[in-house]
Length: 150
Image (cartoon, rainbow, N blue to C red; front, top):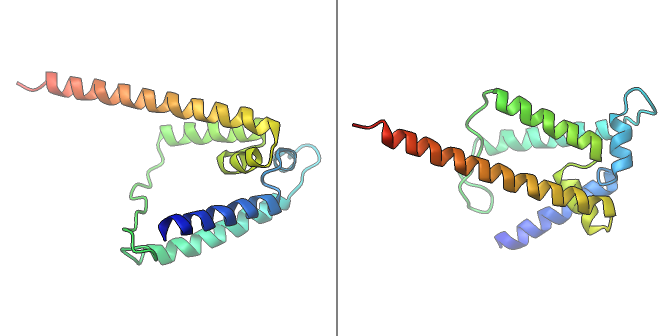
C-alpha cells in the first residue's frame, strides 16, 4: 500500500508541476525576471502550494502516525543558521540560472527536455559531493572526539 500511495503522490505532484508550468524552465525564469517581462503566474502556484502545505502541516503536527500508519516525522529544528542561508542562496541561484529545481527537473527529464538531463546530472553530482564532505567531517569529528578522551 505504501508503494502505491507513493506512486500516486508522485504522479499527482508531477502532473501539478506540468499543469502549472513549473517544469518549463522558460516560464520559471520569466517569473524570476523582475526587471524584464515578469510572469507572476507562478506566484499563484507557490501561494497555493504554501496554503496546502500549511494546512497539511497543522493537521500533521497533531498526529503521531501518518494516515498510512507510519511514524510522523516532522522537523524539530527551526533555527536559521549560516549553513541554511548559504544553502538557500545556492538553491536560488541555481534555480534562477537553470530554471529548474529538483522536482520539476525530474519531471522535465521524464518529459524529454534535454536541458533537464544536464541539470539532473549536476544535481546528483552535487549530492554526492555533499555526502562525501559530510562523511569526511563526521569521521574527523569522531576522530577528534576519541583523541581528546583520557
